[in-house]
Length: 78
Image 1 (cartoon, rainbow, N blue to C red):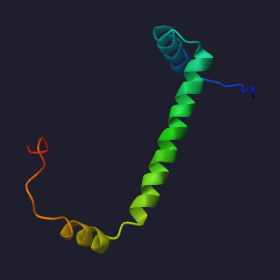
Image 2: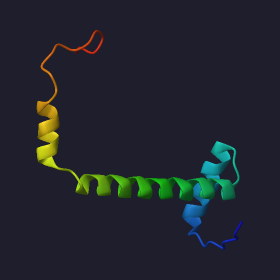
Image 3: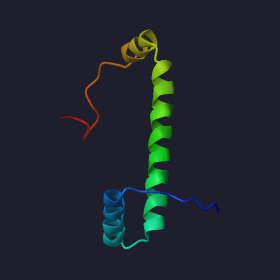
């Protein structure tokens, strides 16, 4: 595990301290969880950007056209 020295403005530190107390975790654990969540958010955004860049409107329209015109299955109606 790596050690990182972090400088926080006093108002950010006090908010992190309060939130970590409310969550009953250490400040370290609160920051590790927060950074981990941000990494997942960024990776998820990148995944969807890449997926969206490969979107083919014609292929999508063709797929929709291939769906049979039928009433919804039991329990799927509005």
